[in-house]
Image (tube, rainbow, N blue to C red):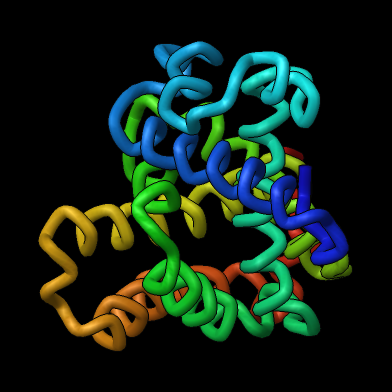
Length: 199
């Protein structure tokens, strides 16, 4: 249940407790190993209360995902890809830096790959779908381009987190942009976006 600010204080405390407990469990174990009973025990609510607000753990997870994605999408609203890719990369890292451990866990852990891929698919669909130059590429080129952009960004983010975030964030962003932008610019230069890679 996404809080609107008009709820009773008891509802706010209950939902906040459920989400906080869920995020703690996500940071501790694989999502598939989390049970409703374990979540309810930690949140100090009964199962009936949980099911009053959520139909399943998947529904709760979808809400947490949506909140994370919506926060990032709000930051990049108005940017156009591929032209603003450097700015979008910067916004991703600035946004990620301010998120908690659950964002790091979902983004970095191999056990959350399906969940992460679902989140990225939504961001990519909104980010790239409005670009006529991107849509002019054949399907193979579009998929490779999105995969390469995602892989470079996520690899840099994971290494930065694994290294204790010691590297200055500005240097990480510059590295990602250096690695990505040359290839992306070359792909779209001089009408390359109209080249069919599968004649």
